[in-house]
Amino acid sequence: MAHLWRGHRARLAIGLWCLLVASAPAQTQAPPAAWATLKEHFVAVERLYETQDGNLSQLTEIMRHAGPSFERDRGGLVSLRNTLALGHRTHAYQLWAAQGGGVIGDTLNMAQRDFAEIDRMRARFLDLANQMRDRRTPQSESEFRQYLAAFSQKLAQLDDIRFQPVYNELSAFAADCPLHADVVARFSDPVGRAIDTFYADPRYAGARNEYQAKRRSLFAVFAGWDAQQQRTAEASQVVRNDWRRIHEDTVRLVAFLRSPDFVNAIPDIDAATVIDSVHRIGGYLQTYR
Image (cartoon, rainbow, N blue to C red; front, side, top):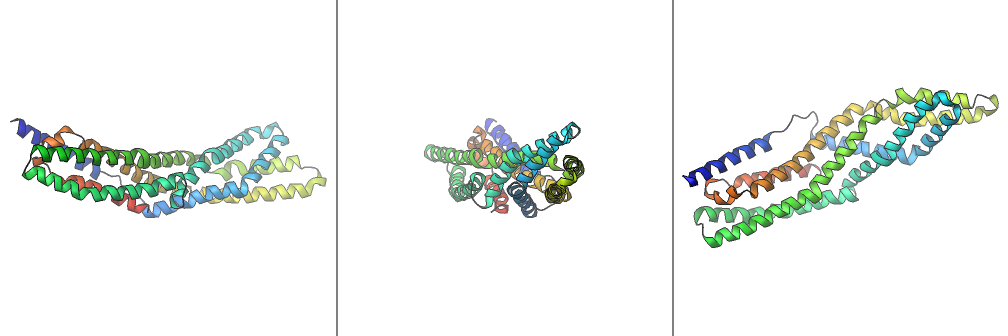
């Protein structure tokens, strides 16, 4: 009876496992296209900092001198600049580095290399599982438990060190994206009026024209961001969904492998379920290669 109950629990666990990993929300963009869209925005954030941060700083300073009536809009623009420079740009750099080095880039590249090693381990895992089915002995069970511990530990380390950090960085980047929606509508006119106010004297017409040109240059960049806001947000959601699944599938797989029922009921379970899960996680990673 105990043996039957163990088998029932194991089959139930497999059923739940399959249900969990199979459930994925519908996506409006395919992951490769979404990743390409998101990389475009990473580059745009970095380019803004490299080419327009000086203009942004100068324009907010003019707003400060133009008088208290511009202080509220200036405060909003300063807050946006701080977000872009201190948060959004940092996350964009880390994530863009996924294709060219850097912390998250190295993480992704190493994750793919480490996962290739895990994928190589699956053949031995399946061989030992078959041995447990056909001829369970104290020696085969001991070897299987040792291998299982190493297998699950490598998966857990991969999630802790690689998968989860990428997901967290993506989430932090996405949290800042709504803050730069409709920037032109909110700030372009107030900045223009502040420039006209500060350089109202006809003697400073040259400076007024110079800073109005800087304003147009800055907000032309933001106009592109505004126009792409929905597309960028959708792409961000698709990519975060993928990395959430990579992270969560790995965590579930580790918990499944470490369940006492897994070893005890090995004759009653299909170890290929684990291999299918490994393939699924590897398939997600292929998108970002």
